[in-house]
Image (cartoon, rainbow, N blue to C red; front, side):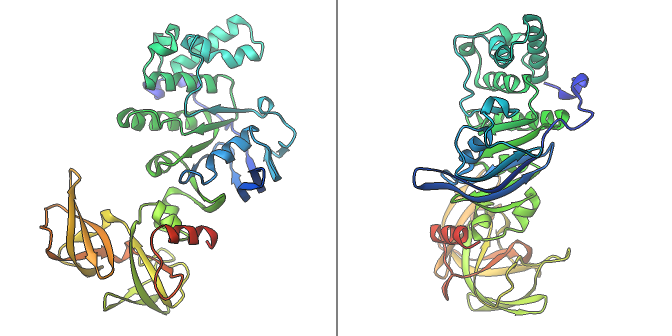
Length: 390
């Protein structure tokens, strides 16, 4: 499918609507799922709701669509309060994880279903169905039954059905999770290109970090019903607001240390070594340390930035012992014992188990956060602590 060839669908102006959430609380019985959520989505923006299972992201999407009641707070679309507006009148189209296609209908009938409910004429429906089928690359497959289509083709039918009603807001509930890796990667780009061309305001729910970062203008990371951080993919990746966000963005390695803040630098002590390192800010590279508080810290970094070998001047070297290894295709990933902690680090060559090595981490890849106590908290407890005390 070549979206650039569909010139008659190039959007000259933004079709999408602005969305504003204020102090939004949603729950079932006595259990609150969303707690005082504030979020603004600009007209024509693509925003991803990212988080682990149970964090509230799907509930937030369903609240936007009008499928679950709101306990308190407001949802407005272009300034219009949605409190008493039923789902079918909110101007939103939702694409489900399961696609929710009618199996007894063919592709064309599924695409035109929403238009039928809106009492469009047969001629109008037929024209619009053909237009949408061409837009999403279905071609002459529109007369096939749903069970005769592949997963990727069914996904295109669901997308065409959602777009057929010209929605100013498109809600996507993990729409790519049922596709294999190859198709999923290509569909990310196709959906993103369509969204840009049509100017739709789009809200995507996903637990896939790569999917969110490759598709969205901004990412909202949720945990335990609250928004932990909102920002561009670059902001949440390079400048996580708390340990939970850092871990969710891939910084799974954790070691304990202490810092003394000295102006725009820190004196970082870990594994009986002390290094003076600059703090990042105002465009200057350095360690990420938003709190700037002297004392015990938890130091997080990603496996793919850590390397085994000699340490360049701009890296911190952590001595340890290889205890396990695995082959990832392009590199070997090694598990290394560093004092009381174990971390993952990569190397282009296999290093034997039991070898003494240096784990070298660029200073700019270090994420520093005050420890909960004199001993840095690691693992699931740290994620819980970060979510409740961002």
